[in-house]
Image: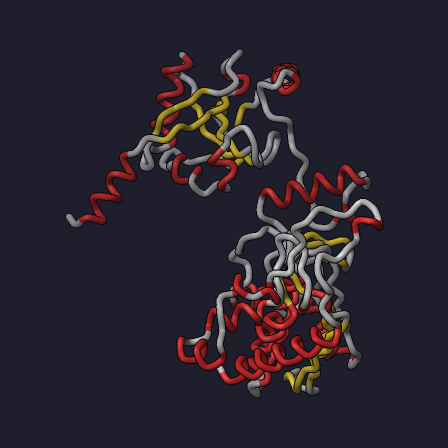
Amino acid sequence: MNINDGGRRRFEDNEHTLHIYPGTISEGTIYCPVLARKNSTAAEVIDSLINRLHLDKTKCYVLAEVKEFGGEEWILNPTDCPVQRMMLWPRMALENRLSGEDYRFLLREKNLDGSIHYGSLQSWLRVTEERRRMMERGFLPQPQQKDVDDLCSLPDLNEKTLLENLRNRFKHEKIYTYVGSILIVINPFKFLPIYNPKYVKMYDNHQLGKLEPHIYAVADVAYHAMLQRKKNQCIVISGESGSGKTQSTNFLIHHLTALSQKGFASGVEQIILGAGPVLEAFGNAKTAHNNNSSRFGKFIQVNYQETGTVLGAYVEKYLLEKSRLVYQEHNERNYHVFYYLLAGASEEERLAFHLKQPEEYHYLNQITKKPLRQSWDDYCYDSEPVSTNTYSVFLFRTLTLLICIYVMT
């Protein structure tokens, strides 16, 4: 027996707690915790329940797996392993049994003809009323409404239901939600494994809304509409700083180029993808709210041949924040390219171009450190101000030097 076999056996010997809800079979019991191993069968768990709850051993019982209170039940066979089925539940259902999507096991009585005995209607109503009172007193979680992937499908459309639906989806790592043909994205501030080639193939040539909301679906619909209608398509990305506009643009371009590469790949696709980091280096900077904030507007025009293959692309920038070059607010930095140059230059290049550390440049550290002045009388110069022409010449020479070295490296 090797080490892996020993680790597997120790894992299988670990005991797990199953919460079994007997319902009307055991009056006054909300749920019964039962210890079981990974290979414990449903018949063994039922035997433990019969002994703990002192049930009638002449009757036949089965375990049922259910998602959400009152939802469809899946009857387990006697040889099924409840712990193995529980391991397939969502992570939130495993970490906190009193929240999430309310996955659980129910104990049901089986009739002689094989049907499931659910008890009388009065008993079911009594249990339901008891559950409602327990929820009001805070002993049981409140039932959560099932989230919808399109906000237009909400039965009650107001600000509260919109935010609650977005919050519930975000808790389950569903960051995309439709509003008709509009896609809402909530930045998770972490990478999610939903952008691999499997998802590119999954959303290929599918109608919007047929699958789970995704930014690939928007790109796919625009791509195929362009080929079928022979008309230009436009995708607008808007949001606050740090909302994920730059990353969403990268995902869109990645999916569009992946769709183009299904046919003849000319290599232009990789050039378009490779231009993104260069643009971000010269146009993105660290701000108080975002470490990679785009300080300019960007219009990307991707041109296609009639076959759907990328022919080329045109990128137009506008509204560049030029003031950041000579002045930065507190806890902010200049554009990335200056720091890339200083961090990536070799020792020989540092000596040849007289490069220092970023904190040694007054040009990169003109940050507001003094309190705001309260009146016009406070605006006095301790020394003679620097001439605007001097700053312009210095800025031009520095930019020229940096750009030349960046191209050389």
